[in-house]
Image 1 (cartoon, rainbow, N blue to C red):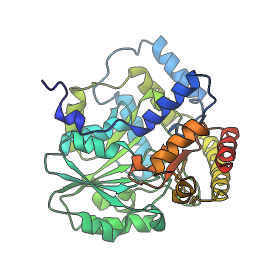
Image 2 (image 1 turned 90 degrees about the vertical axis):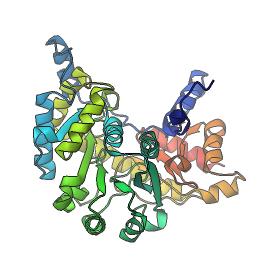
Image 3 (image 1 turned 90 degrees about the horizontal axis):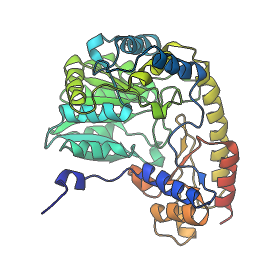
Image 4 (image 1 turned 45 degrees about the horizontal axis):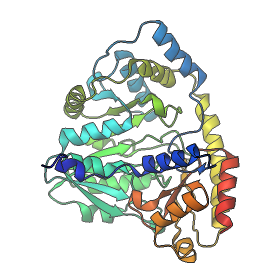
Length: 390
């Protein structure tokens, strides 16, 4: 008798979580691991946000809320979209979930059917393809490598769209590359999508506030508001407010889709944590100066790690424009060390150099590795020194 479903056999465990677990296992053995694999800020949640959670507990906000979030938090999300993105949504066009990941999962379950195709540019966040597969749809991976700054071109998008295409995924700033689409690049993609009205779009904006350079943040809806009626925006407080463990994400989009996503959530997890929602309310409405302090530190670390990695024979590391990752091509280093691929290199780094990295293959980009610089400058320097010694 087969115990497990066919569905679970089609998906892979999260590579980033697996690396973190292995690193923690070695740490438990007393081995000093320099972790460059974590996808979360190394800053504490702001004090005002922590205090809001404590007050929520004392005020008895410990019971079920509406499935799609408290009215107060939904209003704060709508205010945020108006204030920061010049986008207006009604209460029935926004919802709160247990992290940004659940927003994406809810969407896939709500709109995808067997035979539908989802266009996912590579490198991609590790969970996109597997959540598509769990909805019985087919991921269509479009490669966008270093030579094109890790960004899909309009020509590639056009060539990938078929009669079966249901959804297009875009993530900017990107995990794992830190690449950011410009307004002109987004408008060029929009021009293609306008010729294919059956294709919905999800823009993953979770790293919206973590970017540097002179340009303001922009997503594909802001670049072309004509796409608003078929675009879902995914965002949350995890990255910008150092609240990964609080598990609050949110989505905005057409009412018919948000309503369906709410139905999926209502039969799975129901409402997000009430205390975390109170904290998220303060994050969105309260003092925002924390973000600038954190991003300034990330930018400084980015400058250091890019220069240091490019000084190592066999590594080609581009500059990123946001998030807190560097995504260098390491094919030369793999060859120089006599290793097979990026997975073997990541294993070598963990077991021999005690550096935790994530192989690019996990993101659909073999020959690369992801360095997270959401760690101290001391750890970054130590990791680069160890890698440079081989």
